[in-house]
Image (cartoon, rainbow, N blue to C red; front, side, top):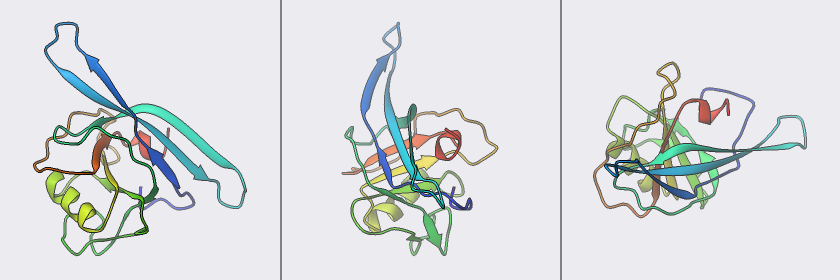
Length: 154
């Protein structure tokens, strides 16, 4: 996501839905994502809504909204403690690519930088399946995983 140009995501928010399997064996906390962005060189704003995210297993189940910030330096995967983001005025939502370190490491970096929520998306080319995310810790921010299609091809 951070490597694409010409698009920005000024708003992202979550709504909680609960789905239970017929056998009652598992509960999945689904996040409804609304992504709004401006088309470069135009005054047009595009909004997309999809039921395409899952809350992390230790995430609080509440909504969030704000401008999206992506890791900018020195680490685009948000694995290093000194990672910075492209946006830091509250409220903002960290959008981080999956891989190269634990979910917990990525969440810690985003929260330390002041994010209001964290969305971790699949690396391009790894498929669009969204599975429950395991991460340790008591978090006050919503933590959601999403497919790579959600972050630019919805």
